[in-house]
Length: 86
Image (tube, rainbow, N blue to C red; front, side, top):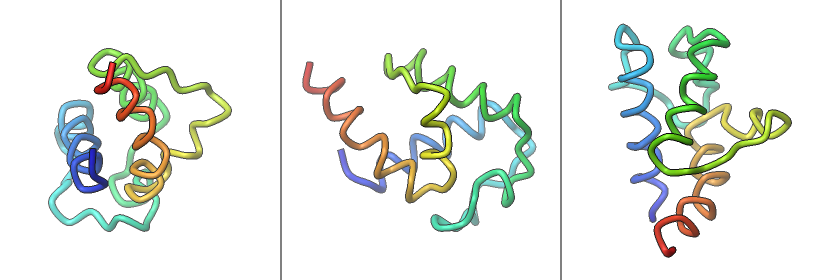
């Protein structure tokens, strides 16, 4: 799965979790929380949605890996590849 597809997945989840967030102009190298004014509950909802949709477990200590769209793509790429290959 390509980086752009992963970024689209994350933006789709954010649009569901935080419907007031403007996801059309998100910069891929800037912290999502800063750009979209996401709080900790929104972030947890994103993690839970990843678990629900893709069966991906993200340990709490690895949450910082999901700070930007670029880091989401780098972190989730191998995990999504493993899930979709199974």
